[in-house]
Length: 288
Ligand code: C2E
Ligand code: MG
Ligand code: MG
Ligand code: MG
Image 1: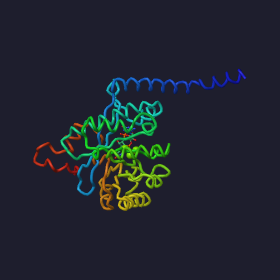
Image 2 (image 1 turned 60 degrees about the vertical axis):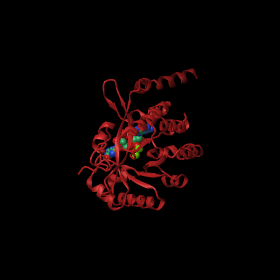
Image 3 (image 1 turned 90 degrees about the vertical axis):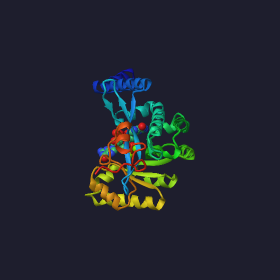
Image 4 (image 1 turned 90 degrees about the horizontal axis):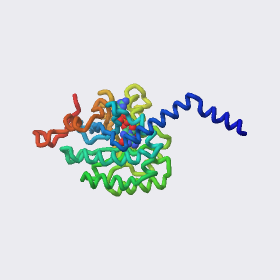
């Protein structure tokens, strides 16, 4: 018995595994320090109305600024932040920072979208965080949009739906992110009245050369029209994709073609009219 356990322990500490474990521990320690020291930044990517080419809002995207100046993308630390629960304080900061920054911009209408993790629904006080972020910033609730993926709804359905309704009651909008990548996207649409559906960029990517992708995007757009839900296409990279989306009546587009995620000051400079300037009422046009 002891011998078997000994062998199991040996296997557990295989060098490769051990190295992985240590790397994870180091990353977790770094992440904890980053939370304590406030080493996070938000970049903002424009959301553009396809019909008029106007910027209607931005999506706040989280980055971690390392001590050496390097910028770590969310894919490299959000999963660990979710596992460890650190996403709760980080997510609280994201909500407060995004609302505060956008409330300072010279626009009374521009919206901001914030991504939420499943862990924020399970732990902490998400509704309280949203309420305090709105109160502290003075941002009108209808200018805040919360993006969730299907993974949020996979968990404790009843509790999650209850939280979503509470959030909706605050006046904020709820968007389904990465639509079509999970296995029950349509089921969730039936259970909760989303304000927006964001078509995953895997479908948008294939649109111009793959008839199936095109058919799916078309179907989602017409579903949106029927349900009265705004449809946003993610990952728009080419003028051809944008033209197709405009033709089929997709409401909104987001992607590198229309603007990469960048610091708030640059978004204001490039996409917002100067306050009091000659075209203060006109939102910026899509770059030609
Ligand atoms: P997402 O919410 O689907 O955000 C869109 C991602 O697609 C962003 O990556 C954005 O930079 C990228 N993207 C936008 N346009 C294009 C395009 O034209 N082509 C390509 N190839 N990519 C494009 P990013 O910033 O690395 O974020 C990745 C994911 O991390 C997000 O996906 C979201 O799920 C998560 N995330 C970001 N910020 C937060 C946050 O504050 N909290 C939580 N919980 N998750 C976040
Ligand atoms: Mg998103
Ligand atoms: Mg997305
Ligand atoms: Mg995504």
